[in-house]
Amino acid sequence: MENDKLIVKPKKPKGEDGHKVFSIRVKDEIVTEIEKICAKTGHSRNELIGIFLEYALKNCEIEDSEN
Image 1: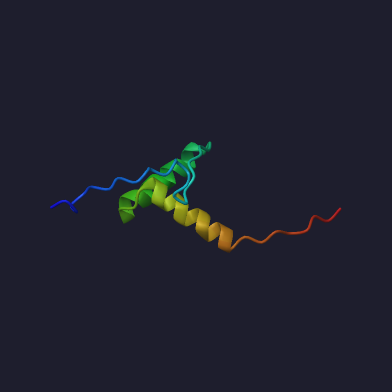
Image 2: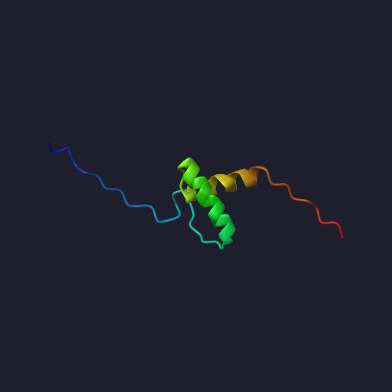
């Protein structure tokens, strides 16, 4: 039983798990729509926003400004 040691590794500091936390301001209407989708799908608000952001990034096009 001498080899049955509990090894506790140091915890990674916040932000080093591949995720970042930040706050944003969102219109009430957008929050209402997100909440409706949460109720229909069972996803959390955080999960949905992550899904929406990933989709937007993959489908975003930048137009050159014409002066």
